Amino acid sequence: MNSMDRHIQQTNDRLQCIKQHLQNPANFHNAATELLDWCGDPRAFQRPFEQSLMGCLTVVSRVAAQQGFDLDLGYRLLAVCAANRDKFTPKSAALLSSWCEELGRLLLLRHQKSRQSDPPGKLPMQPPLNSMSSMKPPLSHSDGSFPYDSVPWQQNTNQPPAHPTLLARARQPLAFPSLSCVPRLCPPKPRGLG
Image (cartoon, rainbow, N blue to C red; front, side):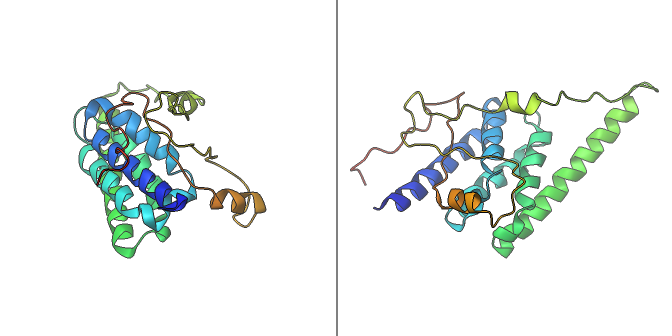
């Protein structure tokens, strides 16, 4: 197995691990935040990852509106992916659009209900601007639970896609940061078995 095949396998294994954590309310926030951060990089939408990524997004579409999960975060994750639907197969793109629209409707209904129950004259609270950066999981595998080098990425870059530094970054393998809340639930598969 060459290094790119190994990288693809490790990334798909990580996506399977995240899919498991997305099904549990206690782990949903960290898993969805990690996935949202990863999806901020265009390399996340490469075809070898699509099936595993869609597995994660299927779980998000089903559980985000349930009690104990995070509808806002689920919608943001689906919206980021739907904004990149041109990088998906037509079937996946259609599912993304449908899921995003459905969660968007649920969010709107929830918002309307909460505004109706607010006393007149109350202004909605605005989150602090730096609240997003404090929610990001660490970008290392310091516990050794998933042994490969992660590649840092920038979420919002103002450079055009043809810029040489972006092209150089796009050629680098994309790796996941660790899930800090549950580092040992999905250990890498033992080598030499199978």
